[in-house]
Figure 1 (tube, rainbow, N blue to C red):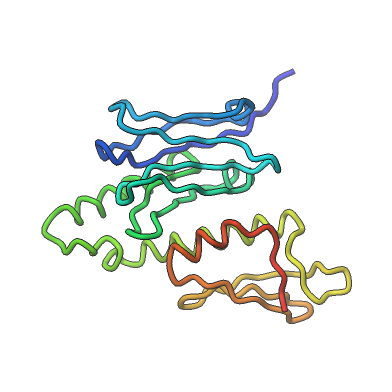
Figure 2 (cartoon, rainbow, N blue to C red):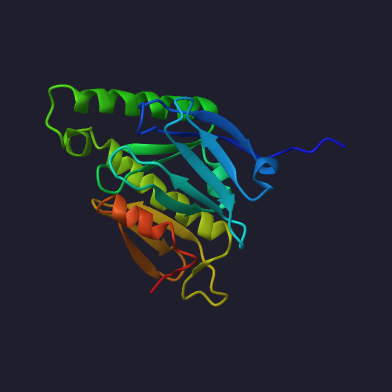
Length: 209
């Protein structure tokens, strides 16, 4: 019997050489204790491991920070996203890319352009402030992916009789508003920066008021 294995493309920005190591990762690759994606320069590596509740923990080296960042995402986000880009919460630089190979390639190319611009004659903080709202889109993408994931897991609750309604997410200036079209309950998720997105990645449920 042939198994249809879940798989995704994983890449990260190496802080040592600025290269982007890329690998296809399958569910079977994560059946052990740890999957490690190493850069060919030998200067860094990214760790991937399953948590006790079946989610995926990523330990990602950072171009701007001295220590790696740790993120926990669901398997649905890890294996089911077209593209899921994770930026450093301090610099706004994209440091991790997950999803379909062609979409990951596009995201890496965009990130390369922004880094080259920042390393040129632009101000040092231009990557975060003058990138045509790309980082803002990444923030909203991260939050809406988590909302979608919680909905699929039945972890969004409202005032409907059975606790589960018909949910929509409205993207506002610096907020994602989740609301139930049936009972009117809603919850505003802050989206002011990558710190908000990283904090929401930790959410195990969402209760609408």
